[in-house]
Amino acid sequence: LMVTIAIVAILASVALPSYTQYVVRGKLLEGKSSLLAMRTKMELYFQDNRSYVGACVAGTTAALPAALKHFSIECPAADLTATTYVVKVDGVGGDLTGLTMTIDQANVRRTVSVPAGWTLPVAPAAPCWIAKKSGEC
Image 1 (cartoon, rainbow, N blue to C red):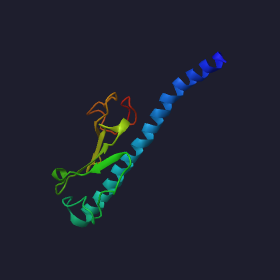
Image 2: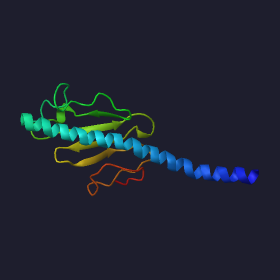
Image 3: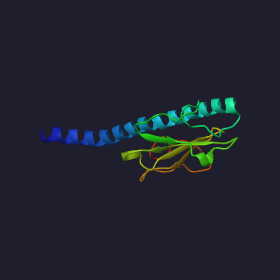
Image 4: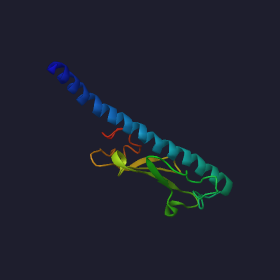
């Protein structure tokens, strides 16, 4: 019985961290897909208006999504000009607090900040969205 308990404990100590990392990677997809969707909306808005100014407002083709489960999304008015924009998502709650990812009009994807214990991708060699806590993109 003790041997069985020891084996189960060893398997659990290996499986639980792997499962936790798997869940976090799944949560990251919500932020990434939201940024890509907003990029498409921003380009549609630009085609209609020849400017990004005024985008991200309710009632426009580039309106922000109503709510995300693991992220908050915004496009700061200070970053909206006639020819440029930046849309960003910030992690909300638990293991994503402190994570910020952005995308701009040139389709440059950046991980601006990461939660404590994560490794930030080395810039400028890695203008990308983080995929794992180790800093991999």
